[in-house]
Length: 87
Image 1 (cartoon, one colour):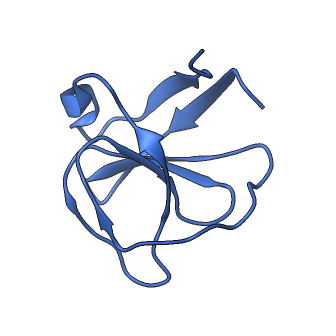
Image 2 (spheres, helix red, strand yellow):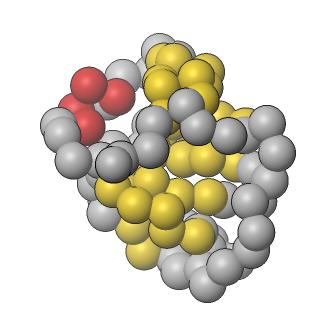
Image 3 (cartoon, one colour):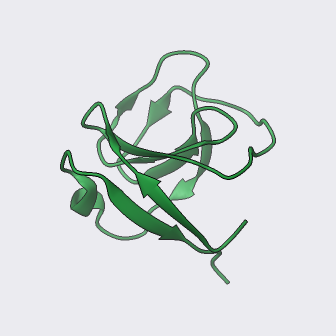
């Protein structure tokens, strides 16, 4: 699916969320997340966390982390992000 341009509204003032064009396989889930965590809530619900916290069950699938400053997401406005594979 990559590269992928994804519109992402704000959710709960802790994350930006977006719908993937198709779901990813299920994997191990956890409840805690850190600032910069990239994850999946549902199989097609991509999230970028810009604050540290904890989600309710069933938890999230951790996909990776943002390697730069995520404070650019810390506002209520929607954003559009481009997701690319790292070589």
